[in-house]
Length: 46
Length: 455
Image (cartoon, rainbow over all chains, first blue to last red; front, side):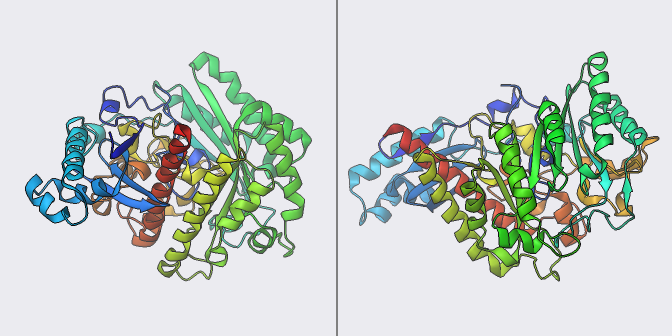
């Protein structure tokens, strides 16, 4: 495309099909203990 | 259907919230997106005619249509329909925050645990209580294999022997139960020594080292009980920890407050000391505290995040980049949408355990009797409180519904909501504003570095 550059991302809708295993890290166990940040957790079931 | 578009550091960025797609676009597409859904090509052409050529307008229109058809723009929200099945999920516990010591050898000004005591008495967790906590975790974890245990405080190194015993006990029950413990430690560093470091490096997946950045900032907020600063004692040890772990699987973690609104300098001070894994987070405090962040601080805080983002891109390109926890965003391998809807897991997957074995929804609720859930002997007694936490998700919070960041922060911190509004389904607005800004910066960094890859 000439006007748009798309950054590679995980399709969230697709992630519904194979998601929900619950094995990924709990957010407050990584570094934050005062603010919720989930978007930076890594998926354990790729 | 929700599209968020913004300009940052010279980039026009478009986030399609429901698919998670990110597009970097030129001015014409940027200007056209807000009118695309409501207007015809003719109407759009008339409106944009003064600024762009007819050919560019047609081309841009086609490209937007292509994105829409590919499911990466103007995507419908299909998740809300699934929220009921999500609410009825079978609860399992997979992570514990063990308050191994309600005592501390520092007297940090902003401590939510009130110098480790959590509005209660000084106490150390016994091995017996800790053992019961690990047994409780295994027994309630269902089919989850990875179990997380954070040794927290107060200052956990004030009860180090019990930490060691619990790690050994945990390892001894892994195989028979088909579980894998991931132990982590959060420490102020005062009691760190080589023997402890050797054990930590062998057994712990992560270590969080508390420091606020510049010496004067650190020493003001993190003094000993006699008022003397702790920076000179802990900093050499923290550098050793970072190096001994090959600059990975650790964080130096600080808190910024109203007193150091120029916190980008604290982040950079830590980076200049050689640290590669850095987290500096906004303080959460009652409005009456002098160090609390206020709405009027937000413009400066935003500027600091922008400044930091630009500097991080520069350093990354120079080969001396570092990670800033709140700008880390995993666009390609991040969590599935279920995780994004369910949030931090407090009161459901994640519980805190006091030195005497009481269970709370998370470390932030410890000491508030209204949230006492049960204990390691009897398990969860107040199931109704857990039920309330289980119902908590981005669609249960009115303020989250129309927020573009909802699938990145997952509805924010329940404790923050409770502290400011008296219930867990609200939001802490100042925190939300900062979170949105951080998501914008984090995505911009990705765009800038993707640019670099192509050059």
